[in-house]
Length: 66
Image (cartoon, rainbow, N blue to C red):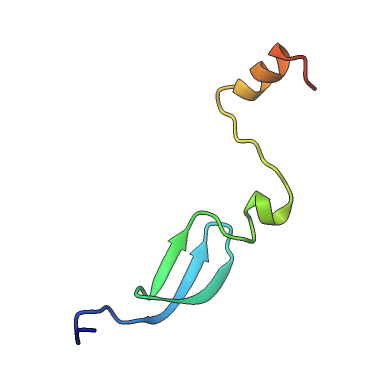
C-alpha cells in the first residue's frame, strides 16, 4: 500500500435521531443518522406504516381488508 494517501481510521461516535448513541470505527469523528437498530422496525418488532396520502386505507378498502 502507498504511504500517506489513506484517511485516518479513528473512533467515531454515531448519534441517531431517536437519541441512541454508540461508538464504532470510521474515518469521521462523528456521524448523525436517521435510524438505528434501537428504533428500526425490523429489530424492535413494531411495524409502523408511514402514510401521508391515505394509500394504505385506500388499498385496504379496495380489497376488503381490515
